[in-house]
Length: 355
Image (cartoon, rainbow, N blue to C red; front, side):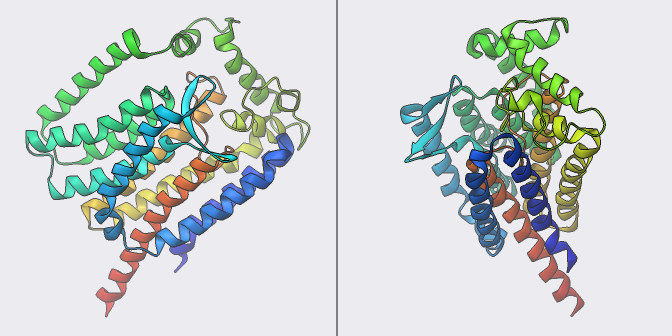
């Protein structure tokens, strides 16, 4: 009985922390963020009411919609911070790349259960399905989102019963794509982010400015923090993107190390619970989707927090359920709604088994 309330509890707690932070550092965005969480809660509830098998059945259409939206982004998308990632719809902006993991993930999971990756045609089909959205996101360019997408879908591939030769081929392919991306596709500012991170800590170029200001904000919070509304880096705008990419640094400056511990525990708890749901089901499709979701939460939150602490290069990804933004919150609520649907199916099977 308690299990069905775990994911709503996590979402509610994240919403409270997110709204509290925005109220301090960007109060003009508070009402919109509250609306996003309210709509996201409704999406979570409605999604969880639909059988996971039904979501798998419509996954080809969701995948097709994703490809159309990503192509539209290239045609009519709005350029923001050097990336064409947003489709303007009135006063709102939709970021289709945020839908990539859940829509493509559902389709890949459905495909893998129908045709296991034991033959070259099945393997190539998997690679094609995964690569098309990755390429369309990468050329926006959205390096961070692309990496999280590939890690999440890659976890399903490595968990599947596939041949060693396919794994070796995949690793070699990834290395080749990485080399070509660095040589041809990566923008100069993206290369600068990586090279500045790898160079001396005394680097004061523009590429390392964001990382330095973020590290200063986190460090100045010390153990107990400066207090709500007392953050210097965020309120004086030294900290760029204080409400999105660097919201964790804004929070850490005001709440300190002790204040950030609940946030870290929430991400660890959510990840472990989604893995737990995956281990309780006997359906391969449900297991794959749970592990895919857990990987996404773990990788994206770890990279963002590490980026805020200057432990990893800046990749421009947001903190799940914490950063400001409607596209991210709504897509995450849909994805966790699918996990909740899996949990409902597991509970029904338990009751039937007992009877």
